Figure 1: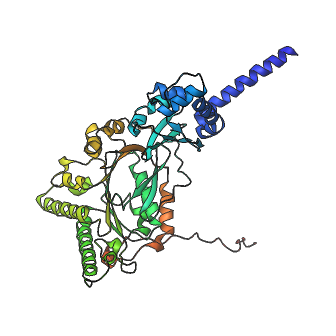
Figure 2: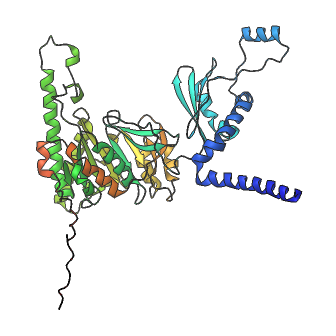
Length: 457
């Protein structure tokens, strides 16, 4: 009997250990909620002071505090760590606010993030500046980019689309008002098309004019035709569409100037320099131009095509330089983009504030996307494995960057969402001739009401 009890106890312990190991690998979110979270909290509470001291994040106590300790206790006066706030658990980690001591700065805490990660047994530690003297530590318990689940509170807004998940478990919002133009690079099967699908379906639910240029005969953007106001499927059609967009931009500037020509005694809040200052009933709908495989617009074989290329590039540069105030935004996608494409390529890239680089085939492509704004992110982009499609490095002109990954969205689901929201397509008379043809949805043929029976002989 005693032997059976011992075997049961040992077997139960081994089964629990094996189950925990399997859950940690196969279901990391469940493992974190049940085991990882309590263990990490216990480690943090037990070793907070010693860990901060080992990381060099402690300071000498104030004179009054030292005198009080001497008067009330006989303990040794030790350095004081940053004051810790409440520990707030999340579905992916922990959040803690620290009040820095005089003489400390957020960079000091950020430099020790890797040490804190190992000390507290979590996947990663990120530091965010909240206000002067206060930082927030975001502890992530597991690799959230392995199986992407967008946060429930990831709600966007007008021209703000939650399109991917950051490595710190927060949503990456593509905000066109803050970052008007963006460059998206990625090799074949890198997840660039998935990023485009999530972005298109997010914008399809808003009163936004969606325009596409897809020189691969429309294989990428044609499934979203019910929601597109215009679509060009080859360089010839693109050469006809771009001048129309430039003319639309000029007409919007005329509308803004007409609004500025009001009486001299009008209040300042009625004077505007972009469409967002116009009254709502006068404001035209914003336009988002998606360009897939932008290199196809630059490639030429004859002198006549070279002249057409120069015209299109000039029009793209004008849209990138002047389109923001007119409510026209660019989303430029391609496998490679740089000076070797020809005249105007570098100038166009300089106008694209946002940068998203998926897996690329060479380091030069990553440098083209990120090297001029965040050089240290180039190595992170080159390290993206082919087994993780959708993983990308996002950077902007502020120098900041982070890893992101888009959730999976099938082409059929994306096309169905665009078809359901076709009624939200704003009417732009200038783009009517470029509206793609949408075939009617075939209806299933009804079966016969009665079954024919053979005639008896």
